[in-house]
Image 1 (tube, rainbow, N blue to C red):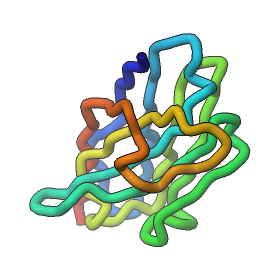
Image 2 (spheres, rainbow, N blue to C red):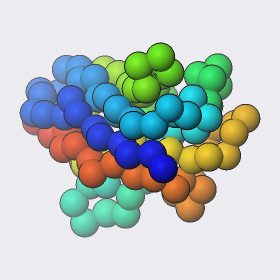
Image 3 (cartoon, rainbow, N blue to C red):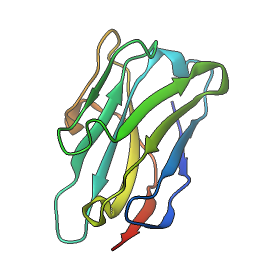
Length: 125
């Protein structure tokens, strides 16, 4: 069982930065692949970024590539999403999720077992 809690969301102007954190409970967090997803008002939830169990592999949606960076610190049971050059279209609730599928990055929702409650990110123009 893994429990996830996101933090770090807020209101920022376009061009600004935020760092989201996803803190996990459980001693086996390093056995889980982790991803970030987001859901804007009136839209379906979409994939943002993912990191493998070790942190050695990452993958990004085209819309955030070059602006967002996902990383993890397994000693702290935490995954981060550094978001730079934010745009109004990045406004959404951001969720982290964990999957027990090891050895790869995972980009599809149905492969994730555990989800956090989400944190709101609002980017003003």
